[in-house]
Length: 260
Ligand code: ADP
Image 1 (cartoon, rainbow, N blue to C red):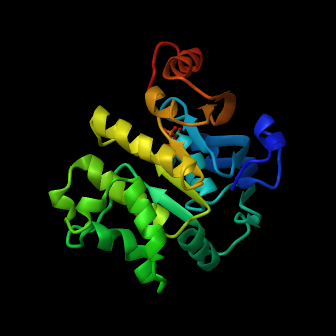
Image 2 (cartoon, rainbow, N blue to C red):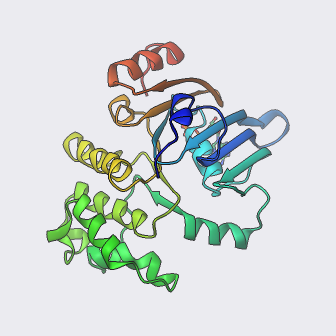
């Protein structure tokens, strides 16, 4: 789906093209003296058809924000939407179904089933849900991710980069409204990592996918259209059309000399 010019010019203004949205979301763990506020009244809009990176030092709340946006964790207060569905008010069953039908996940660990081929891993979530993966769509994904000659291989016969590409293909297979990727290059060498980031980029540019990626790596964030910076549970800055150097420079501002 194309982004209306006005929305592209003002990416932070709420609009109909939000794939996900958080409004005044606070997440606290524990109580009393041990209470930790992981997210502190966060407002976020994730635009459809764009690649958004969430950056910040370790402990700044990146994973918590992703988990809350994806309905993997509940919020203490505030509201979350996936598309126009408010998920902060859904019960467990509805939330499970929404995650299955509308959200794709890519994790640092590839989480492929070792006994299944690459193709079987890609279509597994659809098979479990009783939905056949559209063969034309599957072909397009496989082509975009360069997996055509690897479909009959089992994970152990694939490199780390290829395994993560299979995991990206699996996330894309159900045409989710949004894909959440949590440090997707964390287990990869830099060449394979760059390749996987390029394919995530292609999934946005060529397939119209919406991607949100948590990372602490400035060069990974540079593949995104927009970088949101978190510090101490708050969005403290944002950077459109980032370069690795610009991201690194912003990170230094919030984190002294540490770049993690
Ligand atoms: P990041 O992903 O940026 O490293 P997190 O979202 O994991 O940050 O954590 C943010 C803050 O919340 C940290 O202070 C962390 O210790 C705390 N936190 C995260 N998960 C839990 C939990 N399950 N119980 C208690 N505190 C937690």
